[in-house]
Image (tube, rainbow, N blue to C red; front, side, top):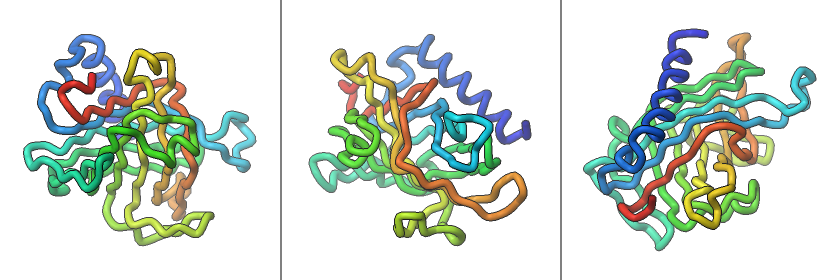
Length: 210
C-alpha cells in the first residue's frame, strides 16, 4: 500500500473514532458539511475474481467553511468557498487499480435528498454532490453518452439520518472517476453507485440536522 492510501486508511480510522468519541461535537459549526468513509461494490463483468464486483474504497471530507453558501433552490445549497478550502477526497478501485485523490472543486448540498439517487439506489436522505480533482481531459464521456466536467464526481447520501430511517445503509450514487489503472493506462469508472457495505456518510446542513 502506497503512502497516499496509507493516509486514506488512517483518515477512515480517525473519522470513525471521531464519530464514536465526539458525537455531535464532530460537527460543531453551523456551515453545511459532509464526511464519508467506507466501501461499496461496483458491478464489473471483467471481474471474475469477486462475484460482488469491484471493491471501491472511498473517503471525503468537505464543507462550505466561512465563505458560506447560496440557496439556488429550496433543495440546493451551493458552497461559495474556493477550491483551496472545500475539502479533499480519496477513491480507490481495488480491482482495476484506479486511484483518485485531490481537492474538492464543487460542493452542493441537497437537504431533502437527490431524486436521481432515490431512483438509482433507493437512498432518499440528505445528499451532497461532490466534484473535484480538476478538469477532466481523458475518458470524460461515459457509456451513457454523458460528458463529465471533473475527474471525480459522486453524490453521497446520509440515508440513516432520522429515527425512521436509522436502519438504512448510507449510499453513493452518480459515480464518475477518470484516471489510470494499475497498468498506468487511462480508464474511468462510471456507475449508478450503491449502498455502503461498511462505513458512514454524514451530511449536515443545519445545526438541527443531527
